Length: 368
Image (tube, rainbow, N blue to C red):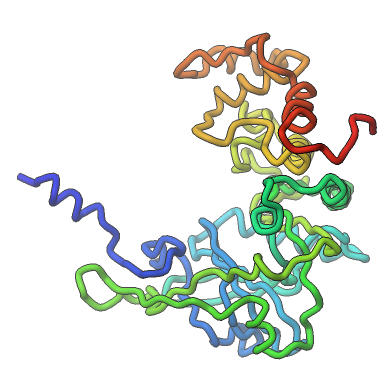
């Protein structure tokens, strides 16, 4: 008979490291590609220098393009076969690359290539190197948790311009939120690697070990790299914004059945599994604009569920749900009473409450 202690040991991860990074068990067949700092990808062209970040479907690395003597970001996707996200992303970015001039406020794809490793076949996308995203800048430079009004207006204008460039080409981003808008970097093209490390910081590396002391399995990296903290040092307010992370993007000829936009900024069309097109980005952008100016999203982030979110949408909106969604709403398992109530503020009242009536003195007026 197994004991609770036995179960606790079974639940513990196989691999451990002193560095807090991506889940190490994802370094397996179909998963992440093990990357070593200093290695060169695509027949020696891209020299890996640092880690920029990771997500559920990829790791992202800062590299030096030995051919052009520039610094780039290399996104290495997991090796799961027929992974729709990466196919859509590459289609979208190739479509954007065919337009000249390139959209000023959308990240540029510079190259793509395939990589075969111990965990399988990986698609790699090479992007221009960008700096910190909006939340990182706020956390580092604005103790009040909110952007100055003038800077918020600049970011809003540039973000809308970037989204307009996408929508003019009938391209949907599918994942608009503040973490997917990043500032450009100062020109680093000709700086030495030593100077580059002064900006990004020296890589912090931790050894990966099996908890049972056995040898690592093939495909698990011996060392793991902590993402750079350059976000704290490489920003000033004159840098412009670009929209990035096109993993949920789509062309009008290949619209997905659903999207995985973070729930608090997810359009109701997606929640109700209605037909979607690139216009779903407008809802997410509206939520992002609210957050840019107030420092908080219009809907709850904590323990949010689709029924609770729909209830909050109805509380803030001035019109009823479309009839085609009403039956779905009536039959949703709400778990608790989330029916819209008249006592809650509408969107305009909520905006004024959190911006104009808060403790901070507002630096924008109520007049447009």
